[in-house]
Amino acid sequence: MLNVYNTLSGKKEEFVPLKDGEVGMYACGVTVYDHSHLGHARGAVVFDVIRRYLMHKGYRVKYVRNFTDVDDKIIKRAAELGVGWKDIAEKYTLEYIKDMDALGVDRPDVEPKATDHIGEIIEIVKRLVERGYAYASGGDVFFSVRKFEGYGKLSKKPIDEMESGARVDVNEQKKDPLDFALWKASKPGEPSWGSPWGPGRPGWHIECSAMSAKHLGDTFDIHCGGMDLQFPHHENEIAQSEAASGRMFVKYWMHNGFVNVNKEKMSKSLGNFFTIKEILAAYEPEAIRLFLLSTHYRHPIDFSGQSLRDAKAALDRYYTMKEALDGALMGYKAGGGQVSDAARALDEKTSEFNARFYEAMDDDFNTSAVIGAIFEMVREINRTLTEPALKTDGSLVDALYNAREQMDGKAGILNLFGTDPAVWFGRGTDTVEVVCKVDELQTMKESLAGFGAVLRETGDGGHAISAKDIEALIDARKTARSEKDWARADKVRDLLALAGIELLDGAEGTKWQKKV
Image (cartoon, rainbow, N blue to C red; front, side, top):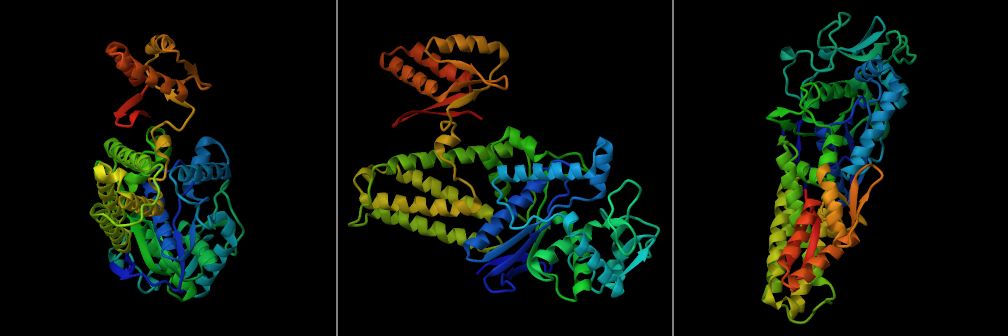
């Protein structure tokens, strides 16, 4: 039984969709006026996994995530740069899509833009005016907050204690400071569309109500977003949507916690944010994804370079196990026959892992517990790979096959651990970028040439060594060691280390990987 924490009720509830076997899911997307930061990435990654798990459970999921492509921030940024507001919106929409692709976030089924739904927005505003929930004033249209009974039910804020929140304009044309804009009269030079109240553009909150209604209907199953959107954005969405339709807007509200830096929320307003692109330039995308899923989605997560290095180290452990497992299974066939005690023990561990996976994911999508279970299985498989009986015990090989299949399947739901180990460790490419000090390059070139290897210049001014030359150097080191020429063997090791390549000696020979 799947249970989800519903912000609206403030407790976990059994997940029962409105329509059997189908789920409508809407996530508030980004306002496209700048590069997105890691806080935006967290929600995207978390809700991507939730969608994947719902599909794994057999639901047909329609996932909608919008772009706010007309907004005060977009207009301001365009004016600062002296370009058109559409140029800004289109540029950062594409940049966001690139970031999500890099992080392994699947594209939603629908990615609506606010500017493509102006007609739907106007129709909702007209309906609210006709029903007495909204009023026109000087070309603007405002929602009368106090006329909607139950305002504050999501954020749990008593209406008399509320103040104007983020992106709720203070405006003398309002009848009440709590009222919020549904439609804004455009100022000279601003984007505008015709409406019954004069040329203008939509307010921020009404956009999501119109887009979700268009693509999911007046009532749908899951609405998700960052915790900072509970008030006023999501509170206002509920008010205007239910006032317009007379129906319940959303059954389950889900909110992800903040990404913190030094215990403060990462945000552009605080100036303590890191863009996704900045972090992608320094760390592997899969390490970022693992970091974001390593804490339960409702809890805050503390960002640091060390936390991403820890995620990278964890992935190294996984892929080291995976490579060793693949090597151990290579050439073996299913055993059959009598099942050994060792095989039975591993099968029991695998069954326990499966049970823990579903228990954790059914408990409000607890990816943190899932990742813990995965690494317990990593330790168990590593232990099994040292069993002396492995080469003769066919049933133990069968158990390892089963363990690998189950782990791969569950990891796929998180979209983690799916890289080929050779690629992960840098051995799956023809060339490897070399990072070293400028004054060391000439020495490195001469030293490599002494071993018959070449340091090539790349088109972007960098330098690289071919994987073939790395393997030749490892062979030269092996030869030197067999001849007890330890100085030459050490020189190869040190030379590769200078190039950013680490050698790993093991029972199966020497392998290499790029250092972090």
